Image (cartoon, rainbow, N blue to C red; front, side, top):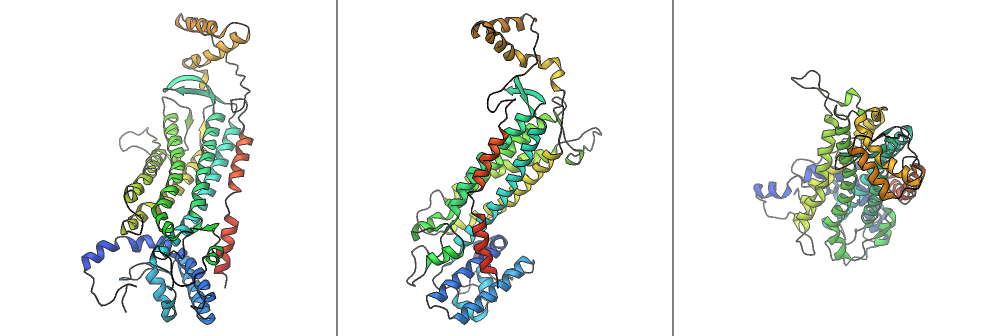
Amino acid sequence: MANKLWQKNITVDKDIERYTIGKDAEMDMYLAPFDVIGSMAHATMLETIGLLTTAERDELLSGLRKIYGQIEAGEFSIAEGVEDIHSEVEMRLGDVGKKLHSGRSRNDQVLLDLKLFTRYKIQEVVLAVKALFDTLQAQSERYKNVLMPGYTHLQIAMPSSFGLWFGAYAESLLDDMQLLLSAYKVANRNPLGSAAGYGSSFPLNRTMTTQLLGFDSMNYNVVYAQMGRGKTERIVAQAVASVAGTLSKLAFDSCMFTSQNFGFMKLDPKFTTGSSIMPHKKNPDVFELTRAKCNRIQGIPNDITLIVNNLPSGYFRDLQIIKEVYMPMFDEILDCIGMVKSMMEQITVNENILSDSKYDYIFSVEEVNRLTTEGMPFRDAYRKVGLDIEAGKFTPHKEINHTHEGSIGNLCNKEIAALMNSVLTQFPFDKVNAAEGKLLKS
C-alpha cells in the first residue's frame, strides 16, 4: 500500500521526501485529536448527502472514536513512512476510510484542524490568564496600603503602591484578554468544504458541519477560506504575544525590584538559583527565562508575517512551515503564565521602603499640591518646592491622600474585575465543548 494519499506509480526521491515532509509528523501530533473530531463531522455530513450509507457512517464514527481514545491515552503515533496525521487516520479506518475524503482536500482538512486546535489552545490560555489575573488582583488588595516609589526614566518620581503595581499588570491582562477574544472570533469560523480553495461539485452541507463543530459561522467564500491560512495564525499569535508582552515587562520589573539595590521584593528561594563561584548568590533565573521566552514569543507574529507576506491567493507549501513556530507557542506561553502565577503568589514585599531618606523627594509633588490647595498658585508652589529642594530645606510630608479613580487610594479593582468578567462571558466555550462532546459520545 502506498504510504501517501496522493502517491500513484512514481517513486519519490528520498531527499525530496525528507525535505518536503520536514517536521510534519512531529507537528501533526498536535493536530491528532482535532483531525479526528473534524473527520467525524465530515463523515456525519457525507451520510446526509448520500455519499456514505448509514452503516458506513457508523463504522467510520466508531473507528474515529476508537482512534480518539488512543490519542487521549497516549497510545497513538504516526507510523514510520506515513506522511502525516491525515494519512495515518485514514489508513487506520480500513477500506471504508477510502470514502472519508470525498468532498475534502488536505488543504481544508489542515485548515479545519488548525482552527479546532487554536480554539482549544486559546481556551487554555484564557483560563490561565484569568487565574493569573485573580492572583494579581488578590495581591493588589493585600498590599494596597504598602507604598513604594514610582519611577519615570528610572528616576524616582512619585509615590506608588504595591496595590497599584500588582493591579496594573492585572488590568494589562484585561486588554490582552480583549485581543484573545478577537482572535478567538477569527479562529471560530468553519473552513471545511472549501476543499482545495475552490469548493466541490458534491452538494456539501457546510452549514451542518459548522453546527456540528460548534463554530460561530463558516468562512463563506471558499477562496478566502484558504487565504485565511497564515492570517488566522498571525492574528492569534499577536494576541498571545500581547500576553507575553505583559509577562515580559512584569518579569523585568521583578528582576529589578528583587535586586539588592532596590530590595522592594523577595523571591521564594525555590524560584532562585545559585552561582558556581559566589556562595551568596540567589539569582532570579525563573524571571529571566520568562522574560526571554516571552520576548521570543513576541517575535512569532513577525515570523509568520515573513512566511506569508508575499504569497498570492491559493495554497502554497510555504504555509506548512508556520506550524513549526505556531503550535509550540501555546505550550510555552502556558508554561510562562503558570510560572509567573506561582511566583506572584509566593513573593514577599518590603513594607518599609519609603523610610529610607533617599526617597524623600518623591513627596515633592504632594507638597506642591498641598500648598496649592491652601491657595498658592500652582506655579508659585512648584517654584517654592523646587528652590527648597535645591537649598536642602525640603521636608517631606508623607501622608498620602489620593482618592480619584485608579489612584493609590481608589484602585478600582472591582471595576477591573467586572470588565474582565464581561469579556470572559463572550467566549462561547460551553457551546464549543458541548458540540465536540456530542460528536465524541458513542
